[in-house]
Every structure is written in structure tokens, then in C-alpha cells.
Image (cartoon, rainbow, N blue to C red; front, top):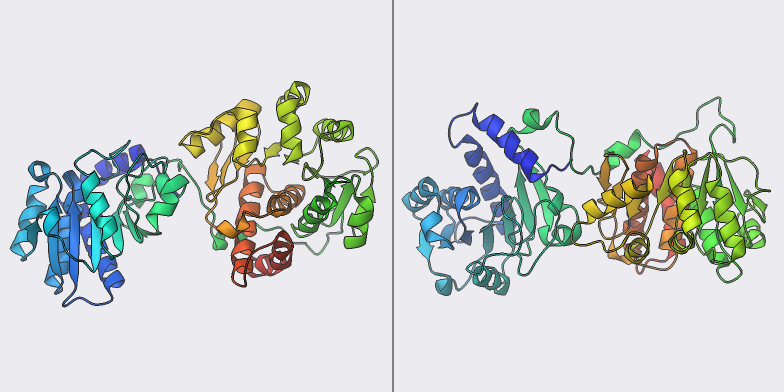
Length: 475
């Protein structure tokens, strides 16, 4: 779960009213010092450099520096805003033998602690902080950031100008959305949540973002019951492929077979190729002849001719959940009547665009991917899965927003999206709620990509090969 800055601030105020002064800062600083020692691998003889900004974030860094000094680490602090430094933290730091130095005097470090800017900041770094961030980047030492790397927007993950690139980000109290999405996910490095007692104060808050774990999937993945048959487990229909792209049909159908349903029906031009590759799949050349299904996946490699338009219209006219990808999205962007039909549907819909497809449908994404996905979901009344390094899944009408925490850049390969769309369609047919089906599918897809990447470059068939093992392990 990730919480907005406003939610974290409210929780802090609630807890601060009930605990001794400085208690939360002491817990956060102790955790920062412990993680810094983990990065160092040793204490005595090591050198830590603190980048100290104004207020509590700088105070956390100074108190952590005092803790490190007591453990034998040589500690130097660069005060980026000397007239606004946390006075009690600075006194404690100096009392333990910590040294305040000028930026120009920093010649080496074994670890750098970033306490320049906390969660209250937004927009680009102030000019006086930019040289400090640049100098930190020049030193061959890992950076540990407190709360968020300085220069990263804590709510959106956007970076406007210079920003710290951390090896580890220690996050006291609660995860911030900016650590999980956008450029922030890249800049944060490994994110470690530290419990400082905010849990009860956040218990009733609606998380700004949800991120599934492997443990979550153990209770979510569809399982056949003793009384099930192939039809009660769910049937998914796949409309994909064309004379030009028959492989898209094979990939989407291949992953649809793995999402927990009892049967897959295929409708489209590539029925011969699909039947040859997957003899258990029921094939036809049109949606009308496919038979009853519990959900549809449509779009991968479909083309944009009259046959494709008729297929999309038939699927949108159905009363079951529909996942629309690739050429299905392109048709929605081109044809206002189809887009209107989507908005008028009473059954759930899931759209899975990459950035360019999203912008053709909804306009510029901007720097806040979560807000963009939310606006799009509300606009069309559908779940929107915005693909990317941190895929965002937004439900309409103030429903939940998920961010995917699995995957690898290797997934940016031809056919990868076809595999994802077939898998999510299958989960829909097996009975998962639309936003959850999209989030579970993205998680599985990412795990399969991670596994495939261990042995070399990833291809879409590799994902199909890895998915059964991933699903078996997570069940």
C-alpha cells in the first residue's frame, strides 16, 4: 500500500500527539543508520557523508549520522541550508564527534545519506541544492535516500531537473506513490519500508496506490473445485490475429489457456494456425459463430479493416467483460461510434494501452501517470491498464488504483502485450473483478519476464513457457 503525502502527514500528526517529542524521528534515524551500515558492510574506518537539508528530513539525516558515529563511522555533514537546519539534531550530531564540512571539502565517501528534501517538496530542486546533488553523483559511493530521493515528487514519481539516484530508499511510516511509479521508481533503487508506528493511524485511509505481492496472489489465482467442469471454470473468447499477424492470435490464445479457465474459444482469420498450435482450443472465423463465453479479449494483431470493426462491435455488444488491446484500441481512437458503444456498456471493460495508444485515445499523459490513468478510466467507464516499467491499473468511479511491482525492461519486446491481454482476459472469464484481474495478470506477466530474462533476451514465446511455472509457484 502507498499513501499520499497528505495522508502520511495526517497520520504523523495523529501519532505525534500521543508519543514523546522526537520519538518518531529517533525511530526513523535508527533505521537509516542500520541500513547505511548494511550498505557499508563495516563500521570502523568507514566514511559517511550526509547531505542535510531543512527541517525534519535533514534532522533524520543528522540523527542517523550521530548513530553511525557512535558505531565507529567517520561522519561528515554538508549543510545545504545552514540557517534552517534542525537545531537539536545538529547539536546531537556535533556532540558525537560529527564534522560539518563545505561541499568543496568532500573528497570521498563510502556511503552518502540524502536528507536534502523530504516529502513536503514538489517541483524542481531549488538552485542551491543542485550543486550538492551533482557532487553526490560524482562520488563513487552508494546513496541512501530518506523518504524519497531528493528531486523526486513523492506523490507522482515525476522528476523535473536534477534528482538523486539512490541505491536504497528508506521509507519511514508508509510507502509514497512516487517511489512506485514514473521516474521515481527508477531513482529510488531498493525501497525499504520502516515501521515507526503510523499503522493504526493509516488503518482507515484509502491507499493512493495498491501493489500486489506474491503472497496476495496465493489467495487470488483461480483454482478448479472438485465439482467443476470445463464450462463452470469459465470460457474466454479471443479475437486476435489477421493474415498479416497470425502469431498475435497464437500468443494471445496461448496465454488465455493458462489463466484458470476451462476452455478457450477463438474467432478470427488465424483459426487454422491457432488450431494447429493449440488443438484444445475451439475455433471459428467470426464472433457470431464462436459460442457463449464469460469474457472476451480482442485486438492483438487484429488489423483495422471492416472485419475487425465488425468483430469489435459484436464484442462490445455482448453482456460479458471485455478486454481491448492493440488494434482494438486503435479502432476506438478512429471510430467515434465504437468509442460511444464502449462508454454505453453495462458490462465491465478493460483497456490495456501503451503510452502511444493511450495518447491517441485520451491525450497527453503528462508527468502523473496515476492521475492520467484515473482520468481515462472515469472518462470511458472502464478499467485502464497503462503499460510501462511500472504499469498502472485504474478503476473508474474512484475505484482502486494498482501499480505493478514485477517485471523487467526485457518485456519491451514484440508480442509481450499479446501475452498479457490473453492472460487478463482469461482471469476475467474465471471470475476475477476487472481491476484485480488486470493487476494479477500484470504481476504474473512480470514474474514470467523476470524468469525468462535470467537466461538471456526475452521473447514472447519465452513468456508462455515460463507462465505455468510462475502460476504453479504462486498458487
